[in-house]
Figure 1 (cartoon, one colour):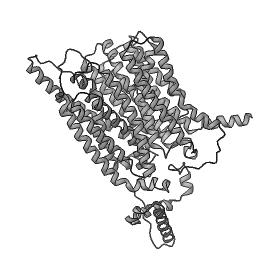
Figure 2: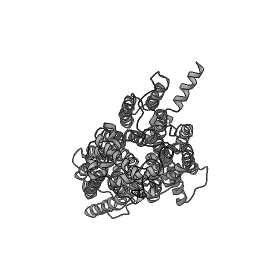
Figure 3: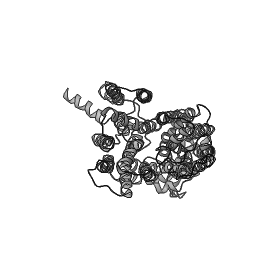
Figure 4: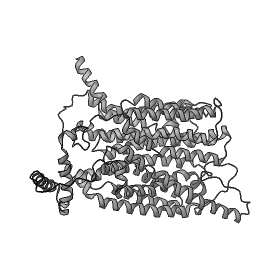
Length: 591
């Protein structure tokens, strides 16, 4: 009896669903950057910063969110628990030091040093993201879309989750939120870091996996609806502290709910001789043991020698023709009749290093498509306060909350729908990216026109489209460039986000807004004043120039709509280029 219990516990510890659930919990507190809007007023007041100084801290935060080269590199050298520990230490040191300064427990540092602390604190998030995605994509190699979508979705929701927990704690000192951001995520990560690892998930496929994903999707939808309702209620009604505690307890129960999946799978009597999913990521050593160097070269030669019409054949016939060609080449090579060429590098779908991927057009198509589309989405998120104020809305908090929820649903839905496309139709995943970019283009038009209710529709479309990118892009990158160096590839692609925001928000949106504000000031004979940064509309200070009406963001929104259409075209080019790859990867599973 004890032996059986020990076996069940060991199965539970090594269950890929436990790794996935632990990754969800880490991601639920990993979106530290999303609560910066709540931290910044405390920092500003305590350190007597002006708006320009505060905006520099915001830039440091954005860079910390996105510069993940160190996280990608260390995740290949260190075990994943080591990378998570580095991220937890960065988070603790960066924000912990900021808390000490804000509360007067440490001497005030110059602005550049504060920027470094914010960068270091937020950069810990890239380690959490990388470790969670790398482990789960390897454990679920044929369910990458849903896995990435759910994980990135919870990262997007973490701001609302952390805010709700802080509301429950109800500290009179607002600086305590900085302390919670410093200590909370670090504690969760340290508690779970040894669970986050590859566990040979491709050998753990069960018939019930579809139901398990359905259950987690249901929890996601329920959680999104619940948080939306709670945030609106707390914003519009004076809620008692007892009720807030009840709301937070229910939130914790929803977050814990997915753990029933690994518990049921490990302690139930479901038979173990189940169909094994095709291994997309061979185990280390297995590839070398089962395949000689000549076999690798022969495979490369087959790719070069096969006629183009072979790729257009049905999956069964295509595999048969390729096998025949490979056999002929093997025999000819053995007899010396042909000299097999050495491959110059990996083919699509195999494992690339970052340097090998950087010379491929496919990677740059993804990067620039992401830069144009997600950069425009981040611009809306960063400027949503000003955009809603310019259209006459007083309560901008509602739109900020709404776009967080739509962002979450976009990530979860983007992963789910793109998985249907590749699994059921063996069609390239980037087609889902093109669709989300066209949805965003329409959303920008609604913002530009400023019709009654347009803010609600625009927020919905931009939130869904922007979120979908962060489910589709990591999954597509892992399919085209392999899983071996996925951490480095993913962190390179995330650089497109701040790069796009820097162009759209830092150059285009702020310049046009300031120009229109000055025009209106001259018309009303208001003496011109220095308008702060692009964030000045979000933090009213020193009465900066304000712009009113849809004209404030009309040109910016139309420009971003056009760039989203260009991004969609780039995605369609990628679809055309990768049809064969997806047919080879997923075509076999349909036969």
